[in-house]
Image 1 (tube, rainbow, N blue to C red):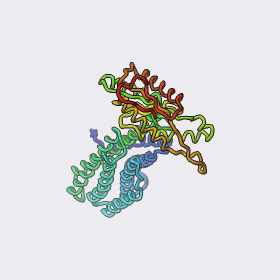
Image 2 (cartoon, rainbow, N blue to C red):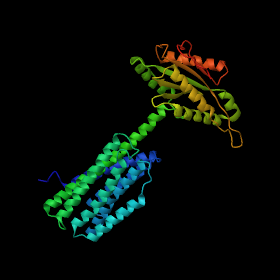
Image 3 (cartoon, rainbow, N blue to C red):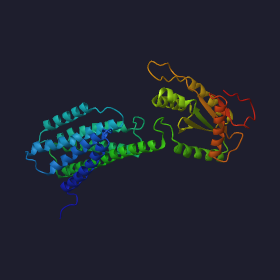
Length: 397
């Protein structure tokens, strides 16, 4: 009766899975060619899959050249996967160094010759060990830009691959030149494990790319395309959650509503492209002035909004004054020969510190009322909601 651990059947099935997965990655790359990591993973998957195919099907070569050719294809998978990981990490893939690693491994493999299986195994496993340790280094926490569950799974596969390569290398040194039946069985099982780890790593890489694509899609759905601030829908979601938390914990909360003064005339005189530049610079200014837990969004047109958790009226007024000073320092330039333009904003402020509000909408209406009041009173100023001057004298800029 045939063993269920038939090596050729297992390699054939794994090769089939690898070819199917390589085809999927190829389609992903064809649809998103900006993600060049897909290209390296396509080449890596094709390399290891073709190595499996040629190990099972005759290609007209003598046994020793065909064995060397198969191992070259299997060996190429590892540095190509490393190049893909480096690209995912925002680094330039070291293609030539990777090819030199393969060349050194193949030189040692050929020098060992067909009779010395132990030295041949040591040569290829050294390449595997170096490549996967370098890949694990790229995925190590604190050294990588890659986030999410995919990175953790890929790191685990890299470490397992490095461990299996080291185990097989040590075993090859112990087994010597000619493998007996037990050593051959271990070598075949280890090779099969490497096939499955290669398949698993390509899956992890695909999942990392999926996580990144999903993150980009979610970012596009929740952020304004021009200013990269939160859009109105996402701002309201986060702001309502912050309001519920503030009311539950009895903490103050403030809302600032900002509007660029005379923005229509800026567009009419200098063009919409310059108007977009003004909005982008103002958005950058708001991001720079915001605290870590402040919520900043573009509410529509030239109107911006900022929610300040744990901020009373004094804190909100101080924040508005900082924003006014920062905006006053902006000098967008309409054209190369034109003088820089000075812009200003009007700000309406409302806070729950001394006047309760039922919900976010009522807080927003109070700030909106003060914004219109600032515009009626001459623009380039801060207006605070009436009835909130319990202590102190809040000057209006």
